[in-house]
Length: 287
Ligand code: KIV
Image (cartoon, rainbow, N blue to C red; front, side, top):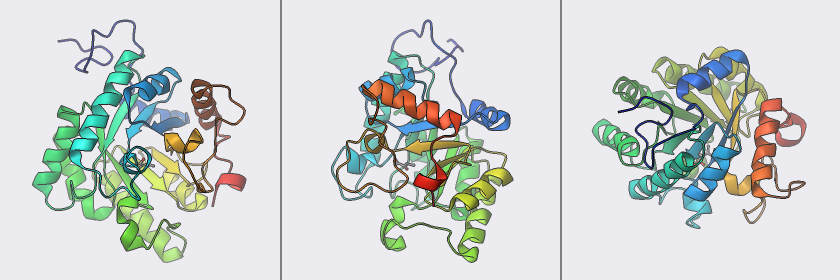
């Protein structure tokens, strides 16, 4: 058994590869002020391009329900779908440099009904899907679960603010944390998740000043989407930033195909802008 970059991953022997990004790498990036560039990925071909273009983290998001399956929201996505797409993404990364970290989303109702089921499903994303961490939506109500997953060796990415699996409860895709009370609640959730051992935290669609405050208050990296430039990193849905998504896009999205002559160059431009802190521009893409 090898302990080199990507050891234990699917695919061929991993020669001449770049060192693997782990949640520890991401934490030290935060400490050193280097921004984390994350994008969603759903298949091997795009995963290969994303890894080659320098994306640090590939999130196999349950957004695949919308952008791959054509559903109205993420709720119909199943564990089988997630495992299938995680496997494809992990293979794509291994076929390129093997560097990017692969995170698998736990789909709706794969972790909400019981802790046993949640642990089993998180384990399946690592064991069968070759993900290196899992993401779950929600706050303090999942702190115990995050603690258990972390203890058994499953790095967890939290996700607060707009949580798309709760679209019906939230009454739509609305900005979160706008009132003082809502902001205080989000801050408390972020602290509980970090204390429980969450390795990373997605902040979706919250005011940039609140995201900056949360980021400064936590030891773990935050990854923003519609949360301003002062997060430790950024994520976008791949199809949104490549201009493939139909209809009106949220204000925080930028189409990186504009001004770039290939998909790989558009991804490189995104990575460069995130690292240079020029994306997002709070005045254009922020709240
Ligand atoms: O499912 C997804 O793609 C996500 C990101 C947009 C954060 O959760």
